[in-house]
Image 1 (cartoon, rainbow, N blue to C red):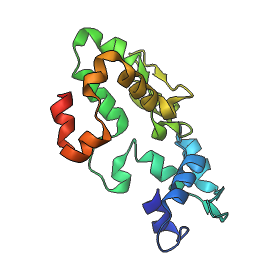
Image 2 (tube, helix red, strand yellow):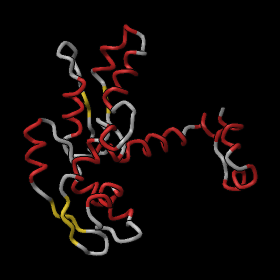
Image 3 (spheres, helix red, strand yellow):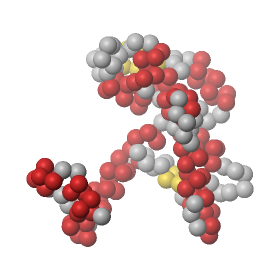
Length: 180
């Protein structure tokens, strides 16, 4: 988002305020589910307040940033989109569980919070003959942290715990020694 905002306008000053770009992304970013929604969203700008109180108008960049999750080529990346990665992962799974996997796609993480993303992902994954279910729980922004903290609190994970002193002494390699 920071790069897109800098390309389109100099909203964020000479340093480029990451916090401001983050705020714009969270508040104004959206994914168009249908083509007519894309045209409507492209035609209007949305106001967003930056941390310093400055009000900025964001237009096309509020769509381009989230759209890059599905079409990375829009930002110059030659990699598969989110939906293609999901399809590839499911196709590489045992055939007998593939239908069940298509019926249990759960979104988590901050970038899944974009308005319209669950519906658009469902549309991109729907081949017409499969039952595709995309679940987008409201707490998905912190689901990964919650799951990780629950896992880390289990007694069987205690041998993998790394203290600050251990990390400072051994560096990142301590993770591989203790956990793998």
